[in-house]
Length: 435
Ligand code: DOR
Ligand code: ZN
Ligand code: ZN
Image (cartoon, rainbow, N blue to C red; front, side, top):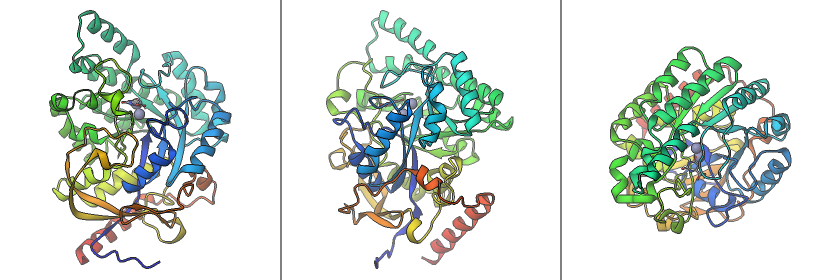
């Protein structure tokens, strides 16, 4: 197929290691078809889906059923997280055999009401997963602190949006990140800290990395671009766990991306319906908003503004996620042919995000009305166009496959990953110079 890509930049498709596609369980919020269509429109070629679906992805049968649903509907590739809870520790070996990308452990309560394991159960869970070599991704917020504060705030009659933040101050995350890192160091389990929201979490993360703990971290566009200053404008729509924080937190998180303390950008794409998001209840559980489709435009806007280079963006959106979960270089690099996962973007395209036009079923977000510069025009997943000229390509439903089936193919040599990446990014630069 001949394609005129004049004026476009070729990027490795983004790997979003943190989405909630709600299938099975909440078809009114999202399903594998709408969620992966949103991914395709966002230049995202691989997603890792969280286990807080109904039923939660906590045993091999449920996992197999979810793999089947996803394989039938997905436009892009995917990995499925297994739930690591107090009751599912014994299922770890079967979940690994069933092809989970890794495990998700909820240290704090959020949507889906998954019970948080005690520290004792966490230690045991870490020991068991360490044996498998899989990585544990953590929702690092300490339940006991949050519940206590939430009770106090409710007793004090607080029902304003800021009470949601007050119930989850950054120390809730700092305590959880520190504890997770200590347990990782003790057991040898690899871990990943999800949705880093505050400057305060960076210290325990930096210190753990300096001690040689195998820990990676992600942040999300909401913590880089939004803050408590936006609460008045968006009210309940901006409610997310962990909450967006005071503006002073943004610069330190950008710096932590630049110095490698925070390894990657994910979105925590968490669709809910407009009715749920605008309900006048600050303790409502419908936290989060869609993001998989707008992450790349939001970040490319910063590339255009000169905050970082395209290679920085590729490192955070594709290379580091791929390397962390053992997918590099099959994913996270520019390839041609049947392995190509590519986003072709118009870096100069200025536009305004409109919730009414997004693919996600959740047409409500704090991204609405945001002016951005940069737009994926075509998205290619394993050599096939799934989104072309801003249109979903017919017949690509079900093209997406689980990365564990890809991982089972002969292993590429990843020992020289950094060197290869340098070659990729420098060829990027020469392409830019030539353009
Ligand atoms: O805001 C959030 N929404 N945070 C989470 O941890 C869960 C997510 C969801 O599933 O809605
Ligand atoms: Zn979470
Ligand atoms: Zn999440």
